[in-house]
Figure 1 (tube, rainbow, N blue to C red):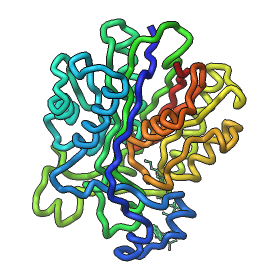
Figure 2 (figure 1 turned 120 degrees about the horizontal axis):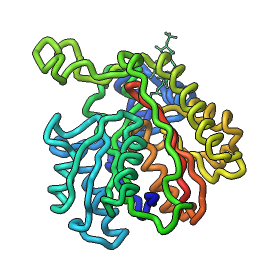
Figure 3 (figure 1 turned 90 degrees about the vertical axis):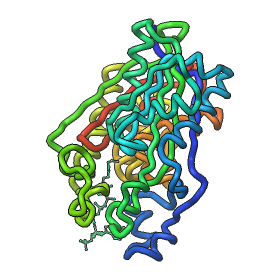
Length: 328
Ligand code: UT7
């Protein structure tokens, strides 16, 4: 039994942080940010009492409403995030409580920017096994909670947001999640991480003074790895499924950098018109970028039965991968 996506939704905070706003607090400028990344603005969840579970709950409620089902029909909730409300309990359990999905079990998945693809493939396995009928998969982040807004090399890149999908059994074997190639390489771990706050370096005055509770990235190293890995894995999935660029309706890439997205599309010989992009408005929302793009294509009525979609990501870990979906 293949898993198909029967509903999508996104939930973005309203507050906008533009490049011009960042110019006022950092030694940066709109031209640099746009030309190096493609980002023009990002959304920020400003309310200090609201976190990732708030955004993910908004996604869950919208998905249930769109699909016309009640929360007690859900079997499983997976939240991909690297900015959970707390280390534990899981953000997925908080969402379960908020929507009262009392027949579902729930867990978080830590795959950084590839978290949504990891979670999508994980959720699809429960459908394929025939043990679950309705699986909610959400990618959500409050990246602003781990940003050092005095560091221009990272804080201009990321934004807050969430989006997700409902997975259900398809009616045939031809549609749904057809193929997935997922990878990790822990040797790249030091190049993109949040050094403290876990069991290795719990919070102390020293870790806070040393700013170890913020995201740290060696941008050029990650760029080099991402540009190769995303292009290669997308091409691999095309070859495995004998897809040519003409067969593909949309490439839905992780939105970290316009130049990485372009390189991936070029390796696939894909027309830019077929590339889903919203990095200009939201920046890098980590696990949420791909489902936000997917929800926006769906909202715009651009997805039809038989549409071939290639999803591709790269993130901390390193983690990367690509999924081939045939829309139903
Ligand atoms: O989502 C998870 C995966 N993450 C990624 O895929 C991100 C991958 N990395 C990137 O996208 C890029 O490496 C960045 C956008 C982060 C940086 O772009 P870059 O072209 O690699 O720039 P760079 O780090 O080599 O920096 C070039 C220059 C430096 O100045 P000097 O040393 O040449 O004088 C930086 O200090 O640009 C400077 N710079 C800035 N200037 C203005 C760095 N950040 C900024 C800034 N505004 N915000």
